[in-house]
Image (cartoon, rainbow, N blue to C red; front, side, top):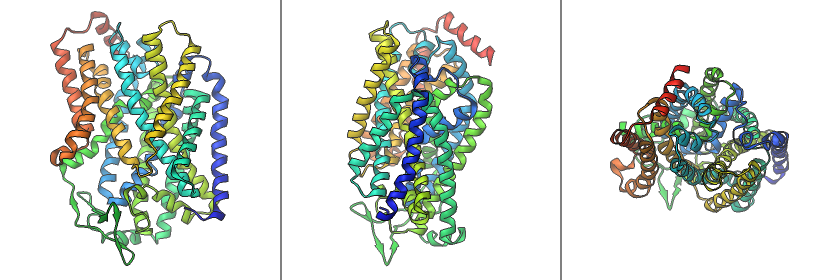
Length: 520
């Protein structure tokens, strides 16, 4: 918690930022409410910079400024580094091989404006089974994702102002909900552009300030090299804890012997990159860009932003351990290292603007999660299945009702202040990556993929995430790998097997595939 006399200035800076975000929402509200396509996809009018920055900002969330530095602070370099490598590679490949095809295909398949729309239209569904299943998975995993953002808000505001975690978490959730109500996808994307700028500036600035305060890179190295496994790529530090609290002796945090970090663990950790192929908030930016010719520029912008941000976030965790070795004594508290460095080293007004970086990351993600989940209910389930003659006005009303319900459930999930953002995000990330990643790839690149394969792939991928996480992973050993990897592989196998064992796609579907292929 920061000292009381600094709180008003920090709060003033953050209020200025929040006011700017609300103004953006109000500005775009009229265009967003023109029709459901504008509200959910912005009329496919995003430029390359906004597409790139908003995709990365909505993807990274508060996890980038709190979760990832927290992992580096708590157990050293390895976990954060290999996760970042996987994410950087996944970002580049997603923009390289998926973006253009999905932009063309989504427009060609009955102007699909959501991911369930695209999957259903790609296989020319009549009964909309794929659409229903895709929508339900989106609803489940985005509710979990939204809760991680509310956890971030709660930790941020309670640390800054000393109020209770639960009350601050609810305040943050209400603000995000109000903002998403206003402007829809256009407001979300425009503000995400600004928030991506704020995030990367905040990360780099705090990184530089931290290095200078520690006395330089050599001093940082000297302060943490004695912790077993802390700076290893193939080992990981093991904090000595009692009831989850790290022990300290004479101001020195205590660590046990370093644990191994072998090839299987590295592959498992890098598997985070596979998640990108199934992230609706990123895939929607591919669908929304105004022209596929601008995607190359977006790819370069997004990859550069991603690499710089991930590297800075990881280094901040390491530097935080050098500066404040015993200040954060649990894995949950470790996720406040960015806040601790900022509020201790920066003038209060400047610290407030840097704290806005965390708020930026949280808002840019949670509004995406809420909006996409609402679209899956109102656009896909309500209009697509229950009431096909529903008007745009009815769709938008139901979308806003759904926003409230999802936010309420997310708040309930986030009530535990000991929630670890990294773990909450990793589960939802695995869910999306395994449910949608394989079918997105196969639908774009393999003509023989059929409806049966798509159905089997989504059910097996999404289901295996739960089975692996809740049943197999607690067994340890080889089962301790990240659930995304086995679930992704199983989904791919099921898509191939069920597609080959059932009737091939119709001539109409195959001709559509070939037409898209020729237009590339």
